Length: 124
Image 1 (cartoon, rainbow, N blue to C red):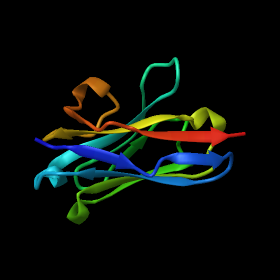
Image 2 (image 1 turned 180 degrees about the vertical axis):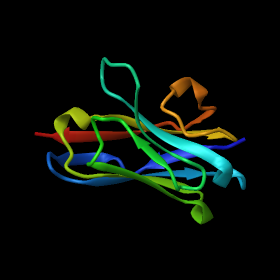
Image 3 (image 1 turned 90 degrees about the vertical axis):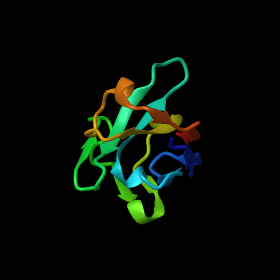
Image 4 (image 1 turned 90 degrees about the horizontal axis):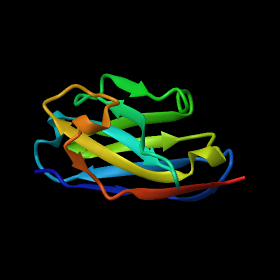
């Protein structure tokens, strides 16, 4: 069992930056592929970025490519999402998710564990 807790959300002006953190419990988290998803008001949850268990491979949605960077420090059981050049359309609740013993993926249904989410609001 893994518990995920996101932090780092907040209010920022367009063009600004935020770094989200996803802290995990459990000694085996280093073997879990991890993803970030987001859900804007009135919209379905969507994929943002994913990272392999080792951190050697990453995958991004086209809408954030070149602006967001996903990374992880397994010794700290933490995955990060650095968000730069933020836009109002990035406003959403951001969730991290983890899946054991699997490849990283953009498919939401393949993730077994989810955090409660952290709000990111970008003002214009």
